Amino acid sequence: MLSRAVGLALGFAADRILGDPSRFHPVAGFGNVAGGLEQRMYRDDRSAGITYTSILVGGTAAAGLVAERLTAQRPVARTLLTAASTWAVLGGRSLSREAERVHSWLDDDDLPAAREQLTHLVGRDPSQLDAHEISRATVESVAENTSDAVVAPLLAGAVGGVSGLVAYRAANTLDAMVGHLSPRYRSFGWASARLDDVLNLVPARVAAFLAAMLAPMVGGNPRLAFAAWANDASSHPSPNAGPVEAAFAGALGVQLGGTNTYGDRVEHRPTMGDGPGPSTQDIDRSVRLADAVGLAALAVSVAVALRPRRRPRQRR
View 1 (cartoon, rainbow, N blue to C red):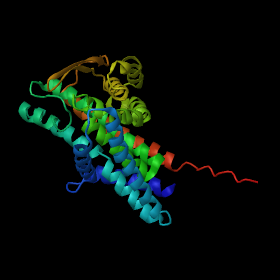
View 2 (spheres, rainbow, N blue to C red; view 1 turned 90 degrees about the horizontal axis):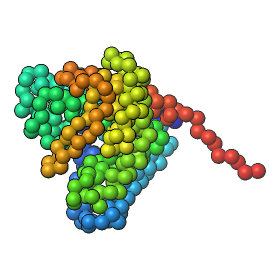
View 3 (cartoon, helix red, strand yellow; view 1 turned 120 degrees about the vertical axis):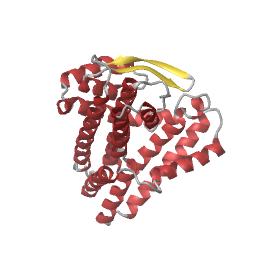
View 4 (cartoon, one colour; view 1 turned 90 degrees about the vertical axis):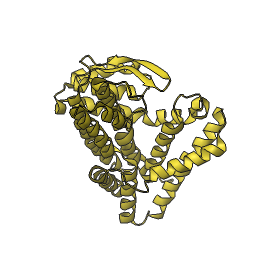
């Protein structure tokens, strides 16, 4: 579908040029709605969480489908609708900017500022992190969010159009809000977390494949990237972050993983990759790799959107 493909490309360009909308961001608005509904619906059981997730993701998908139906006979309007939706759900440029700001503070030897900036990227406690650990956290965030905030929404848009774009972002936002393993959300957030896992199964592996193939763009070796993916990804607690982080580790020639602190919870994650720990300069390399992966994912998504559609067989 030409309007879908062109809309994805225009939305991707808008994200790269403009970044996230500074005011009235649709995702922030959705988060406000989700927070208000949580206050009304919260119970410490899975059934309440399943209903909560179904209402929000299903309702968002339905709204996107209605918007597409209303523009079905107006290709320009549908293209612009797809472009605006793509711009709203992508986060590639903002991800790069946040990582670059961390890099800048580290270059200035300002650890307190770098730690504060890191909180925009990760949920772990940065208060005791040194420059190498800040670099590791940043590279890991760039890798994982390249899949979550760029590759996955592009593929969702290629397959499902506007409805796919907004439904994916709704599910991913709910995972960030209620999908973590805190006592409050262990049951209520189960459905949001599992839905996000399912939706990212294919995109995460596409992102990992692209990162491995594009390793030479940052001085890396595809063979080492694929080896890290094959050997180390399964040790990661996330079924989707593991492949992407391992592929980035191999592509960059660094070692990711280690001890992370999240409030009162400490996680000791197995390492991925065989190189040294990331340095400040590896942040810049990870951003360049992420940008290349994003462009390649756009090309894949445009190709998927343009694929010939099978016509239903007519009954004789």
